[in-house]
Image (cartoon, helix red, strand yellow):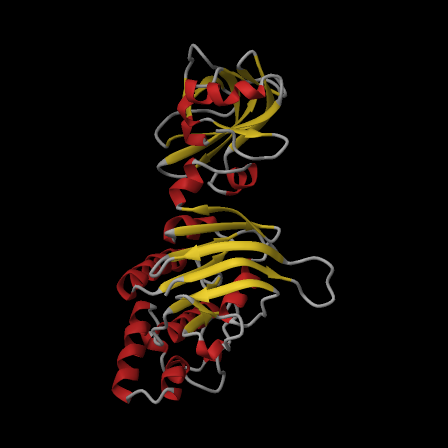
Length: 361
């Protein structure tokens, strides 16, 4: 199902300001859309508006060309997995998962096949005849997922469904959810604050902050071409190294003076209009290189080393005391308190207008 939001806004009664305003978003049929953002940014409110659990103050919500603003939740052909489990405590796991199908008077064989299929994917087959109170929180969340899966709705709505699972199971479930989506072809709208979930699962990421959409696009676009400083600082682990400074004689000079960088030709042209003005420069940790370069070199002292297996994160201090994080292969040898020279991959620099926070391009 194709889901469209046109200038959607939400204002709660008794509040002066809108919680959400000017939300324009189109989610194509069969897409896996992840709505991402920090706590309180409005992402769950938006999901509940799509579900019909929250009213829409202004704008239009459209499913396959049909206006849905006043359509009751039960008539929207959706299934929602809440952040809380919302299971029936007196029913077994099997009956919880089968409940919606039983209400629709589906044949018992169909119900059993769907429940068993979902239980196998979610690794809860052995708990089907337990009560929710007899299983762990993570297992209860999987039951809630299974209850939505068996309905085979036209739209899945998921509000941080993996938040109560341990790290290994969360990783397994990410893969299983993507596989499930691929097999069913159901439009999925998934809310999370976890950028790893967004980057690994989504076709379309929508990053929100303060009730607004900051950027929407593919994971690759978010990582390689953030549209503003908020996106640049939010996406990536570790986050992008970002430094305030100014353009002087065509070069970027950092505020503390540790960095003097001659931009690549593609950036130099765009930065001509910013001569003498404040800008921010950003670069990903893996695009910093060991050794000297003719156009840009800086010295940094290794402060803390994080060994992550295939790579190491060097947390370093530059000559002006500012921090910089550099990713190197795990087999490279570095020691704390050593001073090394590094340089930038000029093709990987990002520049932002300090006044507007918007990308300079």
